[in-house]
Amino acid sequence: MENMSPRVAPGAAAAAGSDRQIWPCTDDRRVGARTGPCEQVRAFASGGVPQWARRRRGPRATAPVVPVWALLAAALSPVILVVTATAARWMQPPGYSPLGQTLSTLAAHGHGHAVMTAGFLAVACCYVVTAVGLRVLRMPARITLALAGLCGFVLTVFPPAPRAVPVHVAATAVGALLIAVWPILVISREPDAAAACRAPVAIAAAAVLLGLLGWLAGAAIDGWSLLGLAERVCVFAQPVWPLAVAITSRASSPHPGSAEE
Image (cartoon, rainbow, N blue to C red; front, side, top):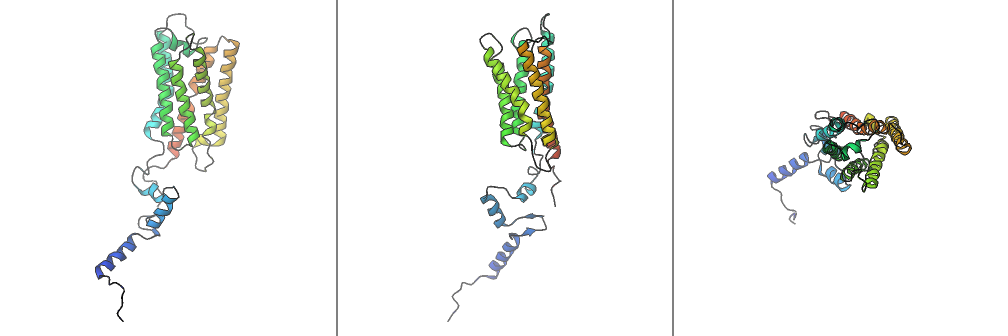
């Protein structure tokens, strides 16, 4: 009785053998990563990305977790705030006191209101861009930072005019509170977490920001003559921590050529 199994040409058998050598479900020591289709199917079916795909897919896969544009946005926030506040102050007519009057007053009245308003809008944009770029953080932390930026948009649309004071004050208070508690949301328990995302450092930063916010609230309630000073210290300190998180996260993230062999 003849053998009914199909015959395979020698060339086809050799090609099949070469395929098995090219796509084994084992570690390929020559490239130092899993290249087998079974590993790909298991990883993508579980909703993840294979480790080799993150490390060996090309320069973009090994690029820093925090992109340069996010770091630049975080660095520009405090600079823009200080520069625009200083410029708007010098454009104000005599009689304005930076110790007793707030930055919102600069954005509402006088010759420098356009400069201060532009500064608030730019800082709000920087917060949103930084939140988008900080992919190393969990989503609640990124959403909180973006919401703080949106509060900046609201307070510029509703300056402290007589009819818009409640909205302006509410947006300012909510944005300041979101930034003050934001260090708690960036805490990571990973052993290789960025320095600014470690619990002791982040908790200390949140305590400082909340303390400054409480000082500002007390000065506003009591009508303290140094309300402007309290507001400036609080507002100028707020963008510092997103910058610290961006710097330390970028420094602790893998760079091209640092992937494990």
